[in-house]
Length: 433
Image 1: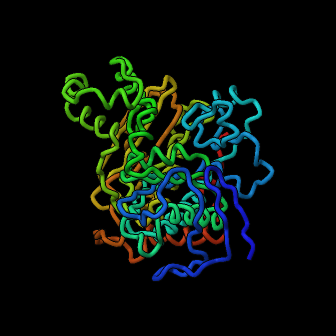
Image 2 (image 1 turned 90 degrees about the vertical axis):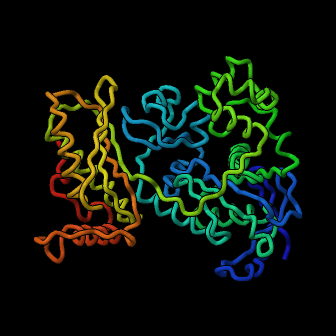
Image 3 (image 1 turned 180 degrees about the vertical axis):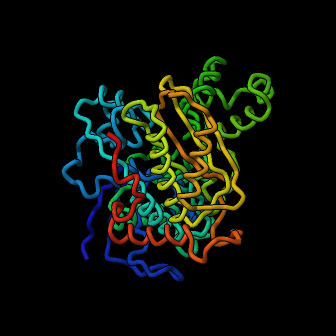
């Protein structure tokens, strides 16, 4: 069969007819194809390698899967004028639109911006499918968020080959099965792998061997180091340190006097690429939540309670989908002047029931004793997360055999079959005027 070049970002992959899957694999067609990569790792059969795989503009890419007419146009995922940008396409980023930016600012920077509503349930399904692809390569997968994960491939070389082969297979499989692209970074450590995937974006792969770590890191600005935020970057600039090389060559004792022992040691390690943080498999989210900004500031308690029900329903649904329970309900309230407060309460028994999460959040809201204070944003979050199938839930003596938990699971099944509007709390069917 004739070779067919496939140009994808920084990697040129020559695709051949599907090869037999690696021994012991699930049988997915097409073992990873070899090809050119940016960086030299050929022949190193996975020993001591960590991959960082990051979806490209994940939320925007998933939202556009069934809207091909929007491809090539600047798109942001978010709500109305008063919300923030959840994700932006690369066309929107060219205008300076970034995640976390107020939507009003994004629209001013990019007049042709197209805004699409977020689809949390869809993002969760695609994320779950992508993580399953990673798990075919190695059981050592550490999800960082819905859209990125670290993979320790140190023990997979005999079956899969080197990191360039694995990275190419992951990128091709994600593109073929999910219709979105991802970027892959590979290195001997998590921090360098993360920076390598950033350098590969969008839709590329960058592998950094142990000998290439220092030449890769040292020309970069200090703000490029993973974990260095704006405040740390400003402090390093104040000390006259602007590149990673300058930071790396400051004596550690001097750095400790300026930044403190723990922070200085961590930065020194990152600057030389010698961090040894392990990949922690299957790390669970520590909380599940949802928040939403009102189109206009509200002070009506009835509207607030209705919104809390909407947020509790969304949060509890996500928990049931993820198979987790939680014990602490957290309420977040942001007022019109952007002052933000949080209140929390721990319940007696772990829950994933909308009715219970809503009751606690309403109780927390009532305890604030607000006198028509104008509210801009509300959030409901559940913490103290445990796996549902490993958590004992103590029932009450007066509790019926089939209660709200069973009813909400039945609602989940109806929603999965007929759509989000199939079954909803009655008060959410009528929007306030």
